[in-house]
Length: 349
Figure 1: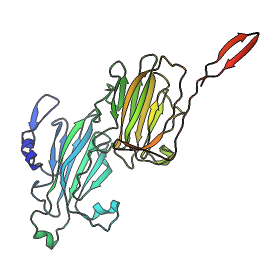
Figure 2: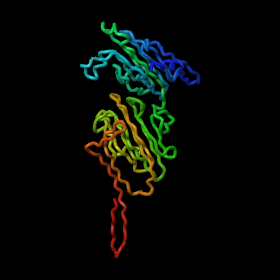
Figure 3: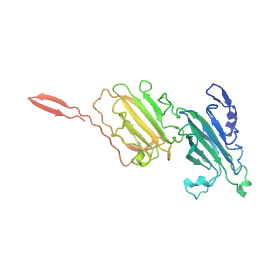
Figure 4: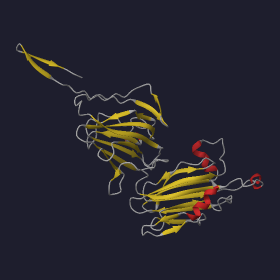
């Protein structure tokens, strides 16, 4: 991994005006990085890849343009290990750590997460155009002073993005997290939550619109699902959630989903379908991944029977839960025939 440092020295990022800047591995602490001058680059702990000093405080503040988000991808991470006897949410508070914050309205901060130890964190993405990364180290014990390079530090790539890391679908021109999937452009593909390489951003609403040709429906199959929340998976339970609708407004026939309980298969009733993902300001997850496909349903216009099976989905492996959420929309074909003066009604499900 350290051999990549030579490439960092040669890396150049295009600026909005078309110029480029060569990135240096060593960047001064308490720096402000604007997308007006560089679109991507690298930040590291002081002295990286050599070990950092005790009692170090260093921050990097990222300022993007409107509708831009800041994505930080850690490539190397080796800090002092936290005490093992502490609870998970307390461990990073008693050792060296890296914290990432959303910067709201240019001043107030909202914590995304704290990271410590030697496990490389998942990538993070800001909820808006501002983000701050803060690194702090404490004192060094007498034993650590005699060890050879016990703490190396961290290296992370940053990038200002306007597509939220999503490459499938056509994003709306206003730069919002609204993506259109049209069967005339792609009949099948894969869709993801924002920042598919890591944690999805807080305080984010993404809408996925599906438009098929007349007689087509869309099928969505989930292969990964981690959306923070508890039943009933809505704002009242302080949950992030995923909802579906056959209409521009809400659709009560289909429940909302969160946690690790994903809908196994979703079918639309017609050629229009809408999927909405909402995250709040409290906690996050790694999101979802799903395959979609437009299907020709014109030959069976009355055979609309939808069963949505709830399944635990993790890394592409499915295990059925002990219960099913069943949503059934039954279409009746009424055939009237007149025989000997009688009217007979035949029901076909």
